[in-house]
Length: 281
Ligand SMILES: C[S@@+](CC[C@H](N)C(=O)[O-])C[C@H]1O[C@@H](n2cnc3c(N)ncnc32)[C@H](O)[C@@H]1O
Image (cartoon, rainbow, N blue to C red; front, side, top):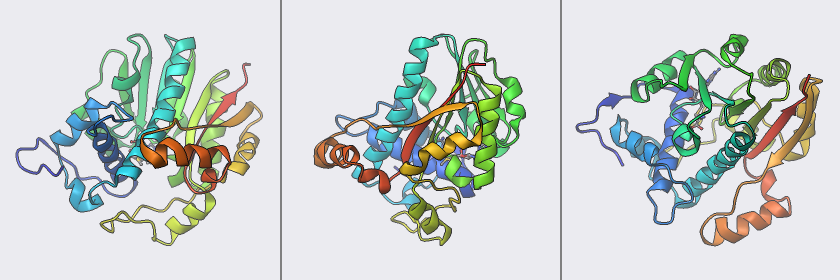
């Protein structure tokens, strides 16, 4: 899917921000499959628009991995759709939105969407996906909690942090979660986390794509069994529970992975998605 010639947008990201290109590539790859587990035409459109050596940097996507990523994305989508069912005019805050295209997959025509991104990524996103009436991107680190002042929480808030917390330091994760719990009574935060062994491996530089592209360090890791500990970040956190990915296509994602998840084995190996619920005042 390299499309250097005639492309309109050149990408010059590096480090953690560049990892959004890997995510986008996986989603677009899966969306182009027959019987995809994720319909994401906006992602395929973006990949075609970008002047970025996807295949040279990341290698050709591995079907199982791309589908696994798409199923993780579906887990977030389900949480957003569930929220919109009960809060159709609510606000979805997407921390570290990257080039996520969830708005185009899940929007109900009424909700408001706020993306919070580092300035360099926000600039790229805005150039490709300009702000709309109900959707905008704020150039602000998620760690600078002033973004909370930009959120209209009057009709409910769901915060998502997809592919962010693992790149932060443990005390930063704690402060961010506590800051969300404090500012958004009755709200919730959907996030994902890598297991501790994977975090430790990433710190040695050993986590690489098939083309040897190194993943940035992931200092925050948490095993599934430790999820309840997230509650200690703030007294307003009433519960933390895992969100299970849907079943997918084929022998592994259709049968083996759901079985391994059911008996608790898979959680030790891969990323876990979870939701933290905040008390009403
Ligand atoms: C792995 S990408 C995930 C992007 C997107 N959520 C997705 O799933 O496709 C990591 C993202 O985190 C963003 N990021 C890193 N540190 C951040 C911070 N302190 N505040 C906001 N965004 C941050 C990067 O710019 C990048 O878009």
